[in-house]
Image 1 (tube, chains in turn cyan, red):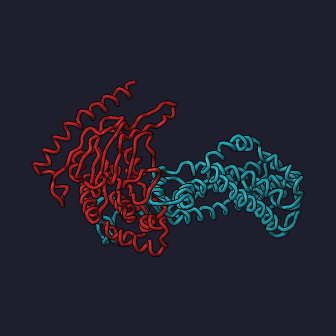
Image 2 (cartoon, chains in turn purple, blue):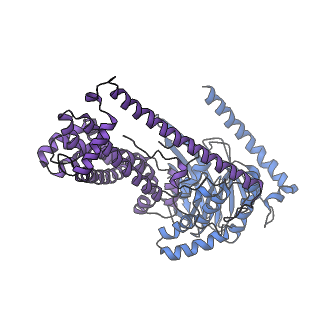
Image 3 (cartoon, one colour):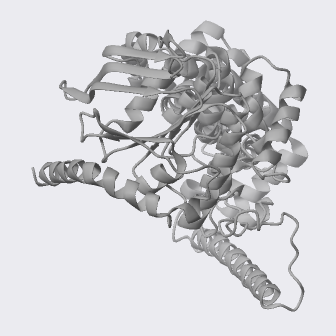
Length: 315
Length: 269
């Protein structure tokens, strides 16, 4: 579910890590250039060559994995080692996708199905995370409220929430809201718990410092608590968009006239395994695009954070 | 002597421990700080030095006894107090100028005027050119300068400092100590400077309080009659400095030993 960007750090546009400015007080010149031909310049050139080579190797590895995986699948179904009727066939998936794109699906044009599912997911994501953030911060700040509500929240969280989809199908009928509501209940808890924890983990020293400097309760919340909890909240958004898509798709299974979930459901019922895989592929592409947008938002909102340590593998 | 700027009379501070017990951090502590005086508080680890500052600032309230600041009993966080924390307490999501401007903005001064004043203070602590950096882009010493400017911009009449330089390397530390004395000389603030380093205490302060091993109470109180302005790095070579050091250390040593024995027992038990 947690589909974070698999791009190496260098491509996301982060500046290379700055050398630690710990040496001399004030000896640090912001715009200091390094003379070409010096040992430093040589070192930097060598390092960037090494980084380039590494990136090429990583790409080659990825291509190799894809070829190995898809190739063995295609080959084993062609040679009838496995029955393509049950496990599908990559070439069949591609041709199914091509038919959907050029001629449309049984439910109408493909883009419309994607748009319907994304509308449900985005609605659920926005409403669910807004509720989660607000309630998480509120309960994180007001101890008494948190203690009073905690058994109910724990109980609600223990319910396998996808089954609520059937309830929402009855309440909202075939409209978009039934699916969005399923997405909301999935998204809400993840964001809520992260926001709550984020508020609880705020450095006591920062709060004491702000209070000494004269911050009132409102300032304390907006200028200290929320920025501090933001890294927690944003981390949860990565996971929760995936969950919003799950909610939308599951909601569609309980009754819908359009959407990728419905499309996959129909394909499954007509024993069209390639159709199921094609639908999954479209969902994966959409989820990855959304993930990229959330990462961009994150980089904008917390630009104050030190750039990640090189060598860390973002998955 | 004029009426004291800070007054603690028979102050006791107890905390409830997570296990349900009671921990007494300070017991029957009495001390006075005159207006404009620079006081240092030394004592072994865990003797309640930081608690003393928390009580003066109003972050914590005394369990018994009386804490008065400028003649008024402390009931909560009062105006006119600056506090420099031991660990980094500058706001990591704010740039240097936003960090320094925070105080005036919280006091109700408009953003532009606050930033204007902040730039002035940033220059005074020697960080001109770094206004738009984030704290993680600065060295430890530079972050301490930001913290100093952040506190001093509010024109505190009382400046509380909790081992502010303990995390810095020795050279940076003595630079910062000199800087602090220069900045302090241009204000009329009373300072309470907590440290475990006796040399630092003598080099900076007009008066040194020695606390006993916890629960802390004042064991001794020494006037440092070294002339000002001082150069922190060089004042250590004066004979008078050595005399004072010996006198204070003879009191402090026993407390340090007591505290060390307790830690050993705690670790063994």
